[in-house]
Image 1 (tube, rainbow over the protein chains, first blue to last red):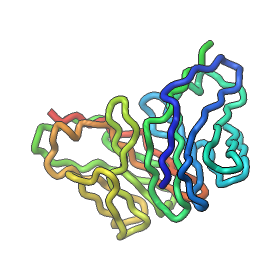
Image 2 (tube, each protein chain N blue to C red):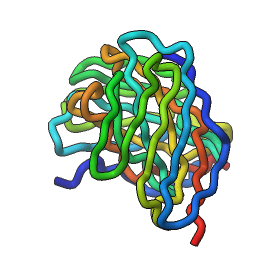
Image 3 (spheres, rainbow over the protein chains, first blue to last red):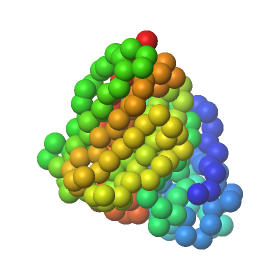
Image 4 (cartoon, each protein chain N blue to C red):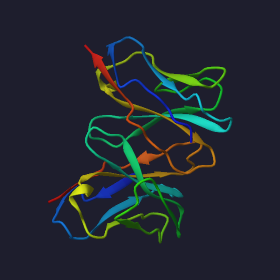
Length: 110
Length: 113
């Protein structure tokens, strides 16, 4: 699985879009990009994943660059409940386990 | 659906004691995993299973055993507890990790004294 690099922490004003970057420059062609988040003391929560096309669901959007070396998770209208640690993971679709790093601690400010 | 249920939620052990952390899911998921999370750190994979009767090691398997006799249950056994195993333990399951990702339990907070 490719290594991912994320900023340690970020702030975002409530109601604004939160853009969380992730670098995965060694990603291979069959590796997906997954995003999870962990709200304080709870189990991680799946957000979204994608291979090469941009993806959107009810929680967020995922933008993957054309060369697939980086991606951005977008929370369109951040709320205080979005304060959490966000994990970006690159993993092949034949693997069965996820390896989490330390993620980005996002703080949404009122 | 109850989702992924972990018991107990809290546990204190003495060094050298053994215990089993329970994990059960009612979603008929094939894939299950155990992670530990130490303060200020990300999650580290202990063991995982791709179906009943099949288990494999993750990043930090030493000191832990698992078994998967049924699809629903994936218990984690601490053979002889050590203070270094003080952590929060999360169990997770998935129908198809490529398309759905994992559903996590609420965790077991273990302290070894």
